[in-house]
Amino acid sequence: MMEENGPHNALGELPDLLIPPHLLPQVFDLLIGAWHPDAAQQQQMEAHLFTCSSCRIALITLLCVAEEADQQAGTPNAPAHTLRERWITLHCRLEQQQVQKEVKES
Image (tube, rainbow, N blue to C red):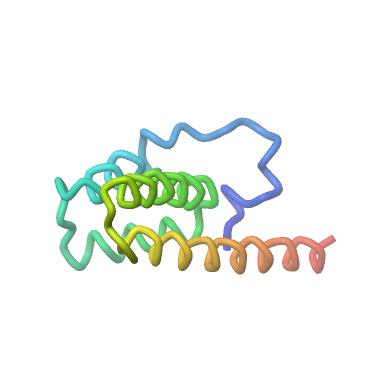
């Protein structure tokens, strides 16, 4: 599932998240409301986030920043918190699945 960007590449060369197939620029634009993806673009983004550990970590990091901004603005129970929690849970599950797959293959 995450062969290209799985945890086994964590010590190798880091990908440039600003160039395709990575989507850090789109994530920035999405979080600030400058990009409103259609259904096909959402599906493509989801597919990439499910397979790219680096982009998931970048998304979680940006959600942490957004959550902090919400807290400073006095916005209780802001969407950034809920999204961050969901992505952290999903990220941990996907990473665990990848490690289990690698153990079975070795």
